[in-house]
Image (cartoon, rainbow, N blue to C red; front, side, top):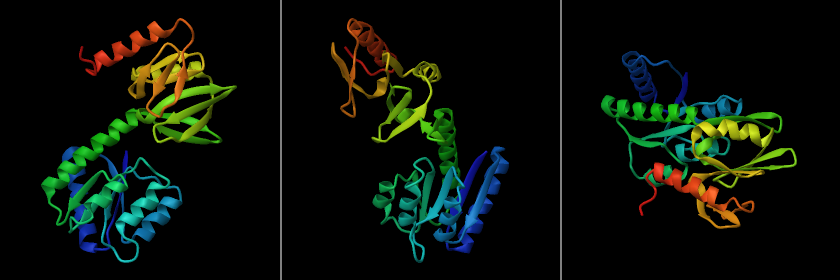
Length: 244
């Protein structure tokens, strides 16, 4: 079930969003839980309690802490939530994308545009859920976007998961098991007994190493170059990334 929040200091706007959401759920047959907040302070307090939302409709122009500042604070602990900004002015459009906003919706809200935004953002939520990996990392459970996983390595008995953001997560387990879990996605290749790479981030392949987008150099065992090269080219051809 999708969990949403909407935050606006205008009571009439909160009522309008609630009405639109009820209508959307009825017409689409969707189950969506939602919570309304009159101020960013209330929203942030709930998030700090550990409540996680899938989608947040967030007004930009509010007294005290504005929506852009609120979104930046939310992003410090949650890079996945879809933030849809609500505003009567287009002047903050550029700033909204600096906090990775999913959409920028101008007021007054209209049913047709609300319908399009909801269809789009819920489709993205579904895609994200289907492309996430749940791992135990240092005593906590972490959900990882598979598409942002650049490569994995094992050091002693610790799995190191390198993300495209540069962040590295440590997890327990075996690389063989991780390889099996990643196999259905089709974009991961075991190039070394200690390394699995995401082929979407491969920049080049030489006889000695695979060069990744982050400039990391993944060693290739002697005699494995042709096998790895062929696997990479086959993947690129399947995805229409090669023209010869």
